[in-house]
Image 1 (cartoon, rainbow, N blue to C red):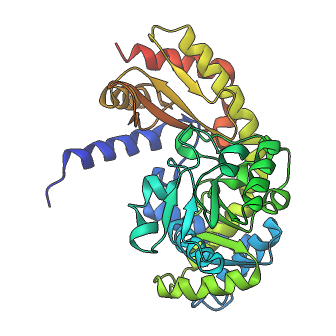
Image 2 (image 1 turned 90 degrees about the vertical axis):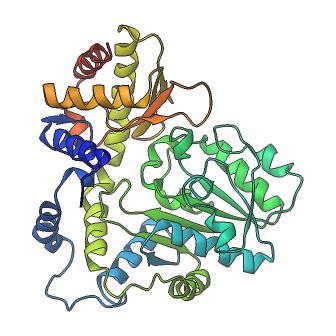
Length: 381
């Protein structure tokens, strides 16, 4: 089979990122299949007894992930799903049946609207409405005054496509109260809920307690292979297990994903506050670096970041920015930025990238960041 130009470019990027001695975060794609499997085999025994029989249909290590996650979130029960898309489909479908209202209020930039191909409507027969289109979570007034009844309010925390942004704790409490006034249930898209505690100044159980159900992911922040959990009341989770089977999510064996989830809970979860704190240092230094550079315009958003992830915007095309990013990695062994995306709205020639600060990024000083920004801008010509 012929190798396409995109495949060649992907191989080039992965090679450059893997060889870089300095990165802000390592992604799963930065490793080969053999490296990931070897690491899992070497480390999994620290979080689970590998002499147990192989998990089948979730009766072993998968059940342990469910128990552990329910405890962490302070929820009655939890069910493991192969994908977050399926977990949320099931949650929102179950709530629609219980409330008698198939309308889900959510943000137009939320994951179901941006990245699931209209599945809520096409697969689950639900209808979505948008209390706001502003690039932030809806306010209590917008929820309270929305002119159409809805059965469920879904809040994505943080709102990834708006820049990983979060409301304040007081704003979040008010939004939830406004939904309750309308007799609506509240579901949290918490794919990245793990890192929201520092911004809110609250622990996971207190955050989750605001909602009727919560979905969390194991690969976005915890470096798991895949997998998600839906947590909530035991009766809801029991119903969700039935729908999981109907949706094709009752997978025969999921122990690699489950073991990697336990490793993420053990190793990455306790470090996320440290990543969030250092992301503020990195973002501030990036802003200083771009301000001192020849870049005609830039935006670091939000500044300071609400989590350990944020956006950087520049007035160049994606191809030019991608090339500068990979050349910097190849030439200097420093990966500052990864992929660039065209802005969803606004004038052409404006692009953004998502920056994640994880364990490798803790080694970067503000000076390191400013120097890397200067090197990057020089490659833009």
